[in-house]
Length: 294
Image: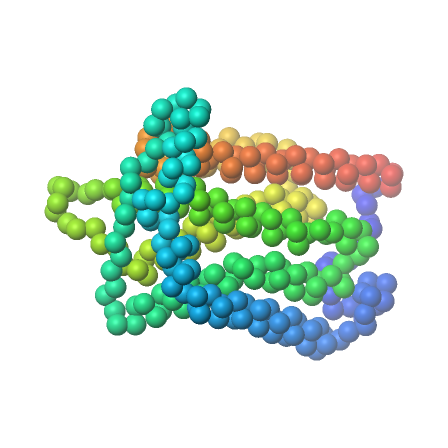
C-alpha cells in the first residue's frame, strides 16, 4: 500500500479554507492580495539594490564587469599558478586578452548602465527574492514538507552564488579568451571590436546561466520528492549527461587540452553526482515510508 499522507495537491492546499490543510483560512482574493505584497516587497528590494549599483556604476564596471576581459584579471594568474603547482606546465596559462569595447548608439552607455544595475540588483537580491517566494508558499505546506524545506533559502542561495562565482571567475575568462582569439577567414580580414551591449549581455548570460545550472541538486531534490525522477533514472542517463557536459566544456575552453576542459566540466559532473546521492536518499526514505504503510 502506497503512502497517502500527501494526496492533496499543493495548489488545492494553497487555496483551501480547510484549517487542516491550510493554517490560515484565506479566500482566493486574499491569496492574490498576499501574492501582490510579496511581489511589491521583492520589487522594492530589487530596485533599491539596482539604484545603489547604478550610483556606483563606474566602480562596478571597472572592477567587476570589465575585469574578466582584462589581461590582469586574477583568474588568469591563478589558473596559471595552479597549472605549475600540478606540474602540468603552462597547460592552464591562457594568452593575455584585452577586449576594447565600442558603442554604436547615443544611448548605449546609459542602457548598458541600466542593464548592469538591473541584473546586478537581481543577483544581489536573490536570497531575499527566494525568501519572499518561500514565505508565500509556506502556509500551504504540511509539517513534513516544512521539515524538508528547512534551510532551503540558505542552500538555494549558496548554489546560486557558487554557480555565479564559477561563471565569473572560471567560465568568463575561458569564454572571453576564446572569443577574443577566435579567427574566421584570412587574418586581418576584419577587425574584432565587440560592442558594449554584446559584452555585458554575454557576461550576464554566463552569470545567470551558471547560477541557475548550479541549482541542479535542488531541482533534483524537488523532482524526487514529487516522484518525477529516481536515482535509477539519473544513473541510466548519466552517460548522456556526461557527453553533453563534455561537449559544452570543449566548446567553451579556448585550448584543446583535456585539462582545461576538465576544469570547466568537473563542477557540473560533481553536481550531477551530488544529485544522484540526494535522490538515492529520498528513494530510500520513500521505500521506508511505504513499508510502514503495508
